[in-house]
Length: 74
Length: 202
Image (cartoon, rainbow over all chains, first blue to last red; front, side):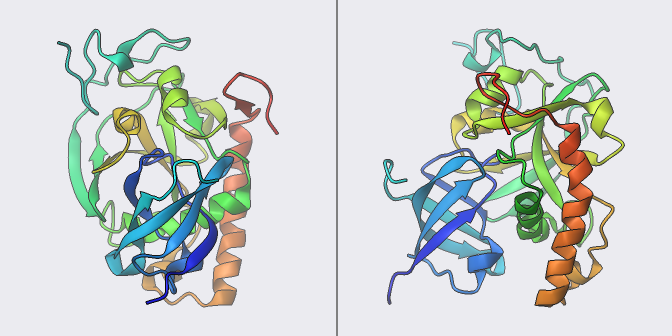
């Protein structure tokens, strides 16, 4: 299966901080197309984007677990 | 060895050090009244309340109402079961309370810009629901703040179609505009915004 790289999306990092592995909302803009294994740039307002891998899609696609791909990315 | 966790700080733990803004001691009513599972964790709803002179901090780095509206819409369904079977339109804020200081909040969060207001200045604009996100894998600093986390809930927007899942693209755009209008006065209450060094931020 092809791995997609999604463009920058905004999530609420206030809830989870910038840890290397966490779950949070799967933004509506990529909900329909996001799959486990995809790469996505996550940002929060004035926080520079970082590249994460979607580990698992949860709650009927409303949420996902993410793991940081590159500490220095972004 | 002092022990602390996301709900309790003890003398000598790293989160209890002095800061430029002391926090109010724990509300005696502080307890978890219910828990709702979300994704890989849970949302605990607490019973504590803020006082009018308590500081409330909001990040929303750009202070952009359209970003905030989109984020609220994204998160709406995660709050199913927190209060009703529908969701909630809300955004995270932190109170300087329950042993968590202003410095703790600024240090733990990655955003550079923030706004602050007294609870008494925002309570007429939106309700603050005391919630703690208990998330496996959350950073320890973020977890340490959860006892001071609140969801600022916007209740002036009709979310029936959103809750029913019957929102078309046009209706979604209209709803986003309505949420934006509702959050504008709230963001105004948190001005002026500053960065973490205390410099004015746009």
